[in-house]
Length: 543
Ligand code: NAD
Image (cartoon, rainbow, N blue to C red; front, side, top):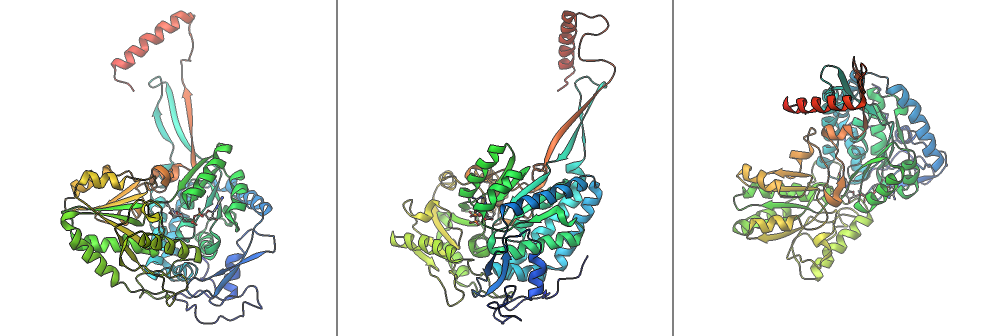
């Protein structure tokens, strides 16, 4: 493993302190990071255009880095390199691949401070929410490293003629996987889907979101430090609309995480080429608080469910359905906990919630809350921007009395805004939770966990957590994660999350007999013999 890149803090960076160079005169410069550090990350981008785009920190608007931009030709070059690397990698044993992946687990835990610094600088999230990212990558690396053989070994299957037909099913890598990822969890979303792809013998070409390239590039470096061949993981940078089509044009499989609108565009392009794709998309995720819920636990969970990463989390809760019997008590506790949150965009561990990432995000959140308030919703907590804390900061917000004509009733806000509804009848609450087009994540709070699981089975979401916000499913890497309905297609995590990157190949070996008349048998005689054999097999209970 190489040393931490020079300039890496090993602890919080203070982005308010002027950096060593002046970004106005040195195009490599940054107010917050050493230029050499930035350069060692950005040199991983395959880019020959000479163009760069500047990334600013949402913490204070200061420049963080200039990111080289890739052209369509650069995308082609990235795929060329990836294909060469993949051909060699596919011959490396599963044990060796798993060993390298396991090393990533240790590296990520060792260098978590550096990882969190970059995530915070680029996204503005609270440090405790930045920690979720190295945590998720360590869990994912350990899980797949330890279960590699379970997912990838060839399997024996029963042949058509017992003892004489031998069949094995092999898992063949697809080739080069394209990964397009969003800004909200910039380190884990850029990496987590690629780890099983590598383990299965593929190469990867990634296009992380433009706002959070450094976090993704650090991931690429850490993969190299762990021992993955450098060319196995290619990074291109640029607008999704421009680079998406040439990536899909060359990928053997495409993995996309982002909005439902973009997911539909990607699915169409993948269909044109008949390549597989997985789409991890948006949600309007519900929590149900049943009448026997532990109210304090539900209120604590609701704060994490709604306001982690300022609600910019795909599995974040935006709708709460609370039983009549406990509604007032629950709302009192939830509002009190929300108002007690410590707000701020700082690099230390003090803030309970950080800032939104961009002016666009602030505009959407403000529009949703203002629209609801103008149409009669009550604001129980928050409800306003806080430019005194950071340029795009918005307070954690709880709304009551939200109705279908309000924008935030059914549309994803992707911000720190939750609507809270009262219910009398559990069946009605389940039906309301299932309303709409999304189906990503849900939660049920109840003291009766068996009943909680029974309710969970009726919720049309790809993951449902009982007495937890989202971590019980999301952090259980053996459990598949993904959306039903317009929240996505395919699954990450578990065997589903690695098998998507393989083709199954069945190899059948036949001994002694052949599939046709033998020993002078006529076609009619062969048909009779086979008919009798089929009846016998059925009597013997053979599948
Ligand atoms: P987005 O769809 O705008 O962008 C996501 C990525 O797609 C970016 O890298 C972007 O550059 C790229 N892109 C944009 N247009 C493209 C196109 N036409 N072709 C190819 N690529 C294109 O999404 P966003 O606003 O950045 O992310 C927020 C959304 O992502 C939310 O809806 C959120 O719920 C969802 N999300 C889902 C999950 C999940 O696991 N289900 C996880 C994180 C985020």
